[in-house]
Length: 172
Picture 1 (cartoon, rainbow, N blue to C red):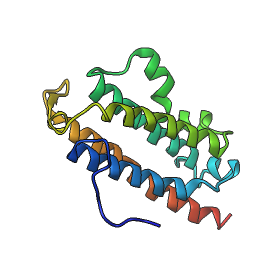
Picture 2 (tube, one colour; picture 1 turned 30 degrees about the vertical axis):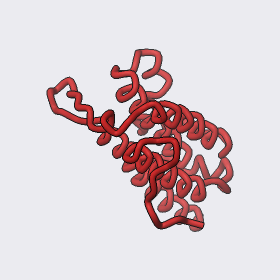
Picture 3 (cartoon, helix red, strand yellow; picture 1 turned 45 degrees about the vertical axis):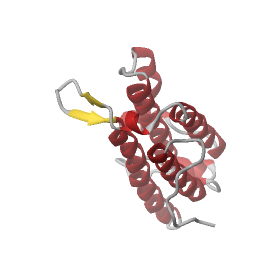
Picture 4 (tube, rainbow, N blue to C red; picture 1 turned 90 degrees about the horizontal axis):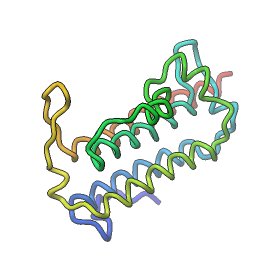
């Protein structure tokens, strides 16, 4: 049953605990949307410019991974990390070619592993860390709270795309 009250997750500071609750809630909803899909469903492309559900799930995991690197390690991706994650980060033509032929368990495992790492790191952070400011290379400031809001925002946005693709699956 869905709990319609944002709470502070235990073993975290107040704001970090609220963030963790929201991240986990968003992930539970995503999980429920995709957990019964088969490989054909995951690879389905409604048109030549679409992303598959599988590539969107891989993208969600990769966005979270990148934000771990930026916020927890205070650096950008290495070349090797980019080689591993770049296709799912950028999506598009290459993703349509290579992100396919995986079961739902493959994508759910990827999402789970990345999230477990996020939770482990967030346990060591406090509310002050959320508000720590940094700057992008172009000089635009951001804080860690915004980075993790963006992780959640990105997942919710792509979950909407997933729902649209699922509706189209019924029409094929």
